[in-house]
Length: 261
Image (tube, rainbow, N blue to C red; front, side, top):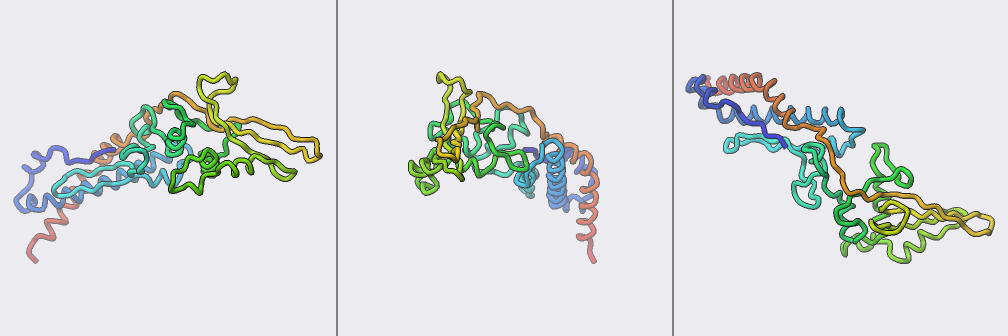
């Protein structure tokens, strides 16, 4: 989040005549909001530069809280995604640095006891499917959540249940069988903690089947990010570059409109 505010207000007012001072509140509001929208566009440009193939969802994630005469401050901030808690936006670690918050699907896995406390998930290239933006496939995420019956009462029909898991695991000559399982930290398994996929291969010749184990989501202790998107700097640069131009233009327009015809 970054706030755009008028700097040196007292000095600015001293240089105005009475007519200009009368127009000042509306001029400041208009100027602040113009600067905020310019800064927002510059933040989007920066996203395309510092992020790897950002999705349209990310590029459209910034919001402007407009200034008012009673609140001479405009704010450029990520839209509230209504995730675990208000204000815990998935972009915050990119903006502020530090540890990221739970993703929505991680919260479901945690509440179900699949994801241990203090851990996050990292997709594994061996078993995870990725979309064109390099993010884990939503379809596979939903399949995993459904497999472990993580949906609440309102979404119970989305849960796979025992029959659904048995059907998914069964392989035929024309279909692979799939099953997910988790390995918890501290277990004696030689595999890293995480969620794994067991793939059953039917040989098609009546000789039985074989299985392959692939990691899909690995459990990791830390997920720290360096700050890559400096919204505050962008807002400051926008103010320094454009304030005088917008303020002068808006003031002149307001004074001209107030003059007797």
